[in-house]
Picture 1 (cartoon, rainbow over the protein chains, first blue to last red):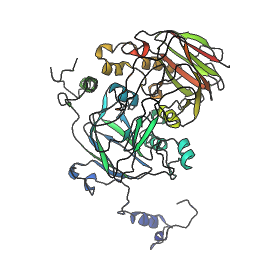
Picture 2 (picture 1 turned 90 degrees about the horizontal axis):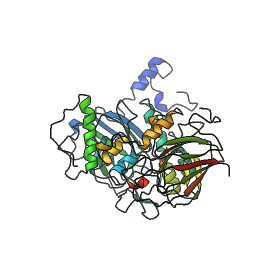
Picture 3 (picture 1 turned 180 degrees about the horizontal axis):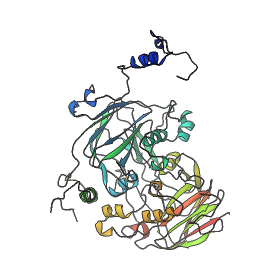
Length: 302
Length: 212
């Protein structure tokens, strides 16, 4: 401790903290405490597990604090479930191809290729290399955003008086910078992000942003990693949240393994663009020896 | 990079006035206080554009910051183009078209395979222009983000349906910006022939940097 304030009284336990041994005993005595926001290790011990989720399969279980962030590498096929527990979380998301982070979420391609600006079930999150990073399996919210990115320190300082990661209203970009840095990435590696649980729509004639906020109560989205991914998540107020005071709720992150979408298992409603995106995944994996195409299977719509 | 230098990709500093041929890239530094003037010579020619703070190219144009601060996805007179920190890089001081795109990003060989099919895989594309021209300034793939498309018309309907549709520009219409900082500008004069963004026939554009 380097601060000048008095240490908390519970530091004055028998033996004190004036020796390494005493400090060690003091540190070790803290284990087992519960915080409202923390990862659960092992993830299979997470409680309470939402209905329909198999606790024994969990590989990631965490409650992300308002103004907090988290990050993880997940294997292809993993289902990532993000839950807005109390109706006020905002999950800002960036995805990178694990091991080659220069391939990453491309929001422009995601909306342009799928001819739609709004996220929903069946839509794909596309990389700049024409491949599927993740597919949206489930969505009980419908209030999401692909246009506004996350918050900047400058704007949060203007709106709330602070945007630093240690302050009361952290900017999403500052949180992403920290998460990215822990994977060797820097500011040039941060493209525009998407966000879940706070809705924005566009007024067609003027292009004006229309805030639709959250749904009431808890809601969740489930994404399937279609390639091995680095996932960065920042949980902080949306950039066009109109409330004058910074506000954000707890974000629950759960993940369990599975298999990526494979040829012939594409939803019947999938468009030809999405088919070709899955084809591009398979082409890449086949050349690496990680996928064997089946002759004639899943013929791409002309 | 030395921001006072004209740089390897520049065609000259403050007195630049060039015609960028169809399908070609261009780059240059627009000094603080100077204007960047882009003219759609042939009409409905998408001009893909990225901006970087010349003194530190890790700070760059941000479509989301620009959209959020102005509250709209379209660019026109008065629009302030902001960096990813929120810093104003340039302001649109005159727009003879009415609106320009912030959403559609750049075409690429890779996204072309999704949008049109794998027969387009070897067609030239804006991302290749950005990579080739950016490399002359030490920029690489990670420096590319959602860009501006001058003269490109991307309406968004109530359902969220969006698309690159027939343009609203015409021969000779111009857009003029004033720089707040020394700004490195990357341009791809879009080579796309599979959608209406260039009227299915890419044409030259004029780019001038001036003090007026």
